[in-house]
Image (cartoon, rainbow, N blue to C red):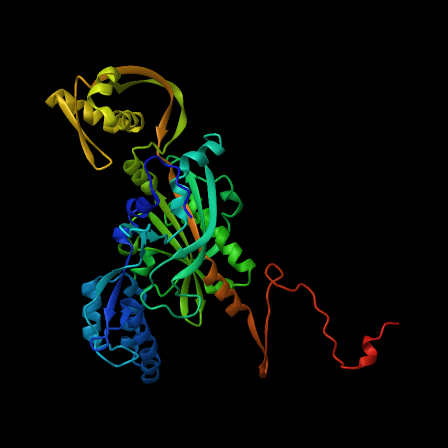
Length: 461
């Protein structure tokens, strides 16, 4: 459940404001005869997986390299590129052998109807993050107005996956854990980065992915990655490194962990930079944790939608003089002329951002009239209703919208990878299998296993 704290914000429009309703999409293709939908990039990757062993057997090096590059790039393809790829390689539906239709976008949001009338459209959340963004003001108060600070949430997310499969890896309902770390955009350093700066990780930058001569991740000291700009700031680098430490502590092999940077054409609509923690499994490389610099996207969008300031403040070295435009309402006149709309108009001017007030002041000076839209209704105001005055103030602080660094963990995917990496078979005896969990996650810390089935051994003496 999302707890709604921001003014004028309802659960039904949170995900519209965040951009998920309009932009949260995958490309889909359909079987031309049965109409069965399949996720476009995955159907191509499945075809590649079947073709590569045949090509390796025939030692067709050029074709192997071509398909390996396609496998790495297809996640980022446009609909036109998907169509061209399916046509070029004559890819068919693997289940039926039928041809495939044109690629088309499919929104991953789970739509539903709210209320007994079924007239209000709603969506199940695709992430837990929005609940923390809309409660930002309350969280900031809890931290006495100081940055940086972080909030974390564990819960269920829902995505209308086109074709769920692979157990816990592609599902429509899943457990996730997200951290929203709010920082001053002028200082994205992390006080504890020095403790992890010497860690060496397997990193696959966007630049390396676009270079055909680079075949995979390279070993990089995280401090160097920040220094040369490969990772954009210390805070996201700190979380990437801590994620690496966490994954290794629960049983994932270091050589099977890589951090892949999103390229420009696959970057989420809210992100400035993004690094995925990926784990190599029998299904290939699987994304298990995303680390995104979401900049101020979410707070700005919710602030615009609710006319509520979602900002923090920083102390200035020297006080500065500001010129502010203030709206002065003629309450005596408004009570008579606006009647039932008077309270709504008062609330609007109390919560409207400074930029909005300034725009209205310019319009009033030019046209002698302004129109504001509230709750689906247009209200005309004249200088008799509201006047705009210029006031000078001295301030010792300045306001700003914080940026957000977000690590997001897929619990089910991590659990699957732990099981696969800790699964062992005894040498020369494939029938004898067992799990070798590290103590951190082992359900049993110690066990006594008798080697002889002798009743006398169980007798107390």
